[in-house]
Length: 222
Image (cartoon, rainbow, N blue to C red; front, side, top):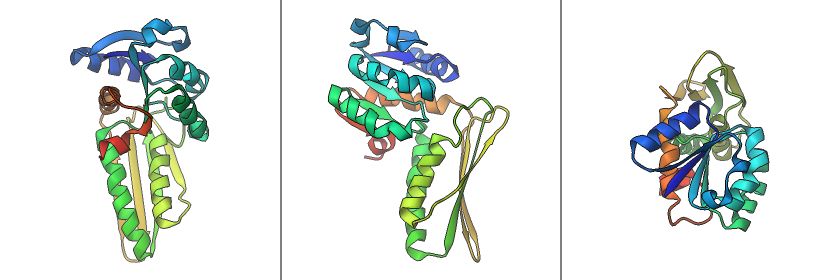
């Protein structure tokens, strides 16, 4: 297996560092993935950490040319059905996630369990606060949207998300459940971006022998 990186920002460079340190086959990177030689792409799993606009412009090329694709870019949920259908039409495996951190995906599972219990019991109102560095282009974060989707599906609510963009915060997500007599809070705090990059590399390895389109948390929890 060879890994190719689309997008060479902070996340792309961190993915590169992990790939090289683990001795995984590495084919390079591009800021303009549509200029990649199709013969090279056919041998590679592409890890995409670009921008919402870039992914929207590039996803057809990714699906048509790469062996498999791992999408860490967020901000394209409104065209998800279209993207999934195109990858399936091309027969190209894809793994996507709003967050590739293993810890965050455990956090998704814990939030799912607790919100189901509270949804059955009643009497609690959920809220969501997320904090990220000032360079993050989307707000709210994809992770926050995933958490709220989980909570709202289990509790029949329409939870508002409060977003903070400040400094160099890697990522803090807090889900709260406010009751008449108490409050439950669940928080995940990332110390660096390395956990996101490491999870994306693990996802790339998972594409070996995989077919179809999958969300990372579903594969991780099997």
